[in-house]
Every structure is written in structure tokens, then in C-alpha cells.
Length: 269
Image (cartoon, rainbow, N blue to C red; front, side):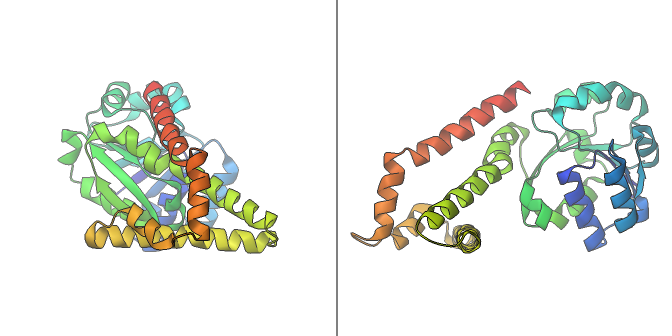
């Protein structure tokens, strides 16, 4: 399978790294374009991918599958040129937020569209990707191969497109808020007297372990996160005191509002 990438940002690099480490495809069959020659040189020298600053080079050589990994804000500036080049048999995979399958079909002149929403933990093969495809793409011989490629960077969940924008916030945007949580926890630890490195180590470990525990328990028997919270909060203990402070300051409400506001923004893109 000949596979191409328009754009070589973080998410594209995550997928490319997954391909290289898993050997699911031969690196010689991968073509990548990007404006930054420095990024391209790195991909060529470290992985052996075919690279170019010219998008047309990638489209012409990636005869089977084409990943579009540019920022949604600049897609319209390149879509007309891509439309002239994309073949009807090519499967187009978009990881752009906010760009619907219908919009992509009209912009690129092809019905074979797969829409993917990965998240930044894909950079360490611990991510999750939501996938929605047009009816034409579902019949494409390379669709299953695309899923296999995405599985190299984490879990893959096929969903109806109507859920993608919400998933973009709950999964795609939320790592930024989790990183803020880690930073805030560490700051609290520093104020309590912990050295900075130690504070970050314990804060990151707590978030990592808590997420893993919640995921395992939910998979096993649908254990609600609130049940796990109750396991930590002893009567008249220190944890419940912290829970009270978070509730008084609208912790949960602020997160819900962040999801809703980000969701509204995605609908405008």
C-alpha cells in the first residue's frame, strides 16, 4: 500500500512513528510533504520516508491512501490544488478538527473520505482515535489497512460522524486540561514544601495511574468514576476536605463548560 501524508505535525509524526516501529508498512512506501525542510530531513534520515516540500509529489505517489494532517485553518488554501490531483481511487483520511465528511467530499472532489480524531497520547502509542467514514470509504479495499495503521498508536473506535465534534473535546482537547491539572497539582505540592521535580513526578504518576485504574474498572464491570472517588475519601479525612474545596470552586462545572465552549468552537471551524 502506498500511503502519503500532507503535513508532518505532531499527529502525523505519531502515526509515522507507529508505522515505523510496528513495521505494519514498509517505510519506502510512505511519502510525506511539509513546509518545514527540517522536519522532512528528520523523517527521511531517521525513518527512511520519502519526503518533499511539494504536496503534489505526495499525492501522485501515494496512490492508495492520503492522510491530510494540516491545521484546519489552512486547509482551504491548499484544497483547490489537492482537488486537481486526487484520484477517484485514493482513500483520503483527514485528522482535521471541524471539517465534516460532506465538506471534505465537496472540497476535494472525492467520495472516499475517512475522518479521524486522534489525541496527543498517540505520541507515545497510548492514544485513542475516533474514526468515521463515508459509505464509499467503508467499501474501499484499503479502509481496514487504515484502521491497522491507526492501531499502532493506540485504541481505535469506529463511530457515527455526529459524535466526532464532541469526541474532539472529550478526548482531543482534554489532554491540555489534564496537563494543566498536573501542573496545578505540582504547584500545590511545591507550596507544601516538595521539590519541583518530586512534585511533578508524583502528580504525573497519580494522573497516569488513576486513568488506568478507571479504564480497567470500567471495562471490567462499568464501575462509575464516582465509586472510585468514594474509595479514596475517608470520613472526616484529608481527601474529602479537598473535594469540598474543588466543589466550592466549581471544578466539575468549569470542566463541563470547557467541553461545551470548545464544542461550540469546533462547529464554527
